[in-house]
Length: 218
Length: 95
Image 1: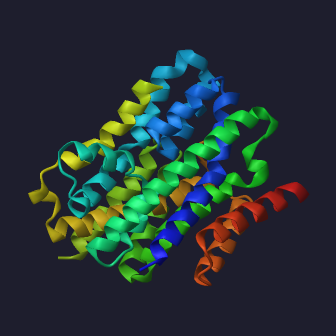
Image 2 (image 1 turned 180 degrees about the vertical axis):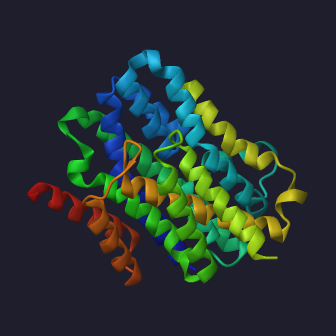
């Protein structure tokens, strides 16, 4: 199917929209353009990057250990994505490093929405590479513009990120079981946000999803 | 920067090191699929309806409703995201 490259580039461009706000936030938080770019190139995981610069913005360089811990905690879900993608991609030896770096929300979501293994692989690589290119180019643009941009919320970039997650999960919601699982995770994340540390509500949502799937089968 | 990136990368890589015999079982795949849906749905909740660890409803709600409508109409991803951002920005400009 030729739809996969179109979807992949479209998702890449969309993530580029909020990569601009990441680049701007990075330099506003006191990081250099190079440091901001290193996060997008090496960390390459939106939620972890925003958490990292968010902590640095409020606590400065003294808060680096906390910033690392928050980024690490928010990165746990990529481990679940990796577990899901490993048998699909079947990468041998050292090439696992490449697939690991591109294992993010977007690449996994597009891959798992496909119906056969060849399309799952194409979905993963097209989306992973497309997001990587746009994410880094637009981070650079945002870092160069810096605080001239102002509050990203003024441009609705927070809504763009929320809508992106909705768009990624949308193809899976055609099944009523996944509708129920999605709704349950949504409710659990909101119910726990004010009582547990940042990053945990999302994992609790994932836990509820796994439990429903596990028990629903019996 | 590098230490933080390595910390985040460790998760991505660990997932690929689990032996194939555990992860290729269909039961496991169904649970991994459910977890993907659960993670993305929780992320909608956190990104769309919270501010500094408190539940809040603001212009992100109409933006998400618009996004859902456009997804229902099978609009391209980039159109959905850009429209949601634009609606939210417009609402914030006037209120």
